[in-house]
Length: 411
Image 1 (cartoon, one colour):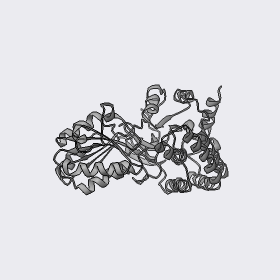
Image 2 (image 1 turned 90 degrees about the horizontal axis):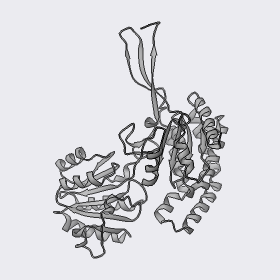
Image 3 (image 1 turned 90 degrees about the vertical axis):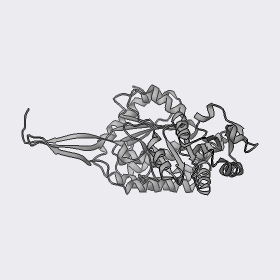
Image 4 (image 1 turned 180 degrees about the horizontal axis):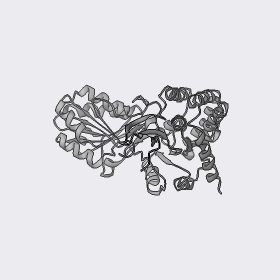
């Protein structure tokens, strides 16, 4: 038996003990252990960051990798939020009486062992572990090679916290390998892993979806659009654009595309293009957009389908709301889409017509986030329709069973 199989078997044994234990106390101990280990974690993370900078990794990806005291406090605050959430286990989702008098109830239960495959962001290491533990499942983490040392330090601290709470440390495990083959082996571990959730770029997600022999909740890329309708408030639309594109361009809920109605384009687009240029954003546009600003590059066919995760945006002028909807249907990734408009009719049509996990009217796509939705730290954002969609919190990472209580009834 290889080391990964042994790790998964230990996680399975640990998972059986979790539902009956005080998981909130364990999370509190993990929070304190992370605080105690913060100097070592930040020192280790700095080495990961230095290696990636030396490789020429883009700043937007360096931002995802970097931990600092503020981010570490955010990680701990995420744990506190999870502690404050209701226990997701043992909830009676529905119940009824059989004609023979038996009570039938559908009750939430843990998945068991959840594998998380993700890229770059070491904060996901803690977020995922906290949510899985609260949901009564053991978690097996496989991050990217760029954050391997950071993830080792974080997992060591969390396992110390578990031990301090009297919990099995194997409830949080790290696949300690940079070899991509380890991901494939995890995906093939039927009977040892109950669910895998990928978080990362299109290549990682495609690899997981195409190779998994275990159940997967597919999180997707964020090719997110803002459509500026002819009835939009230009100032509001500009604020939504700059927030969506510039606040954190390397995350999945950042804007990647701007669609502008032809009637408002002469007023709105010159301002928007200048503002994007001032913010250091490279603009790639169609011929109508390029005619308004000499610095706009020509958008390729591939650009409309690309999640840039950088200070790059593609811009197109559209003839109508229907034209915008058709473009989003063809190129959108089902993540988050937004409209800026003062028209109730346009807003209603947009929300009822766009097939995405989150659809916004006059608000930034940057809000597609479990923390912002009040779920506590999120496990990921699902762009599929089974079994979860959108930001996934505790309620999305439990299963259920039917519990039947009788008085000797036989069939």
